[in-house]
Image (cartoon, rainbow, N blue to C red; front, side, top):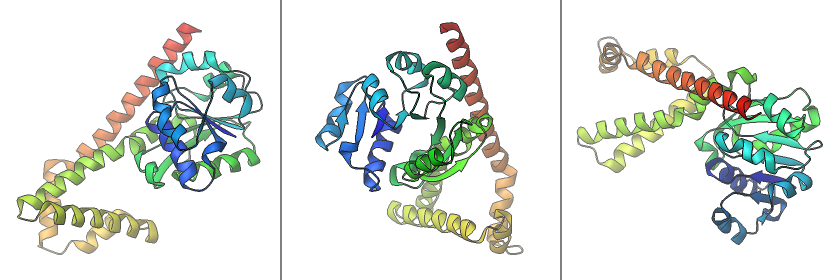
Length: 270
């Protein structure tokens, strides 16, 4: 049995993907949520509901998907978890604190991003040393329903939050700007959208398949005194590269700040 506590954005994505990918049946997943209203659509599809304490006692793997600020309340509702694997999506709540509050030594922290909705996400993962090979394989099987798994040291999860967790929002802004540029030049919204999305997908798949540095392909496209170099020159003059790097870095700094604030609050509650 798999348990999911919290069916907000991330929790609901995980619940749906575990079933859509064919890994589990709805009745093999127990769901708990503070607002019972959010559980209704899942119950209608065959998912089962339970209290956090019941999930603690019944499930082999428990996903903790509540907001970080609600973590202390959730911890107080859990029962014995010593033989369970915990998978936490809670930003800025470290493995050490989860172990301390649950007495569970097998803890995995994950940071999935929005494309996980269709199984094409990136899932940053860190795990405690007590998660053995079999436990890890079980977790990877479940998490593969969300997309590509990238294991990192826990200290790098704030960077993962900025680079893959928040980055889809920045990419959507860039996509919107490119579509608007096409409209400004006289193309319809539909054609602009299709061309931009397919160009982005093709460019990404090219890099993934061949493994080259992006700069190498940029030079393939850039002819002497041509149109592309003029555009690249304008991007450099406008500071696009630096602006994007600064955007990611400031998002990273905010993630670190939230981590410090939550840790201080947790220490105060403790």
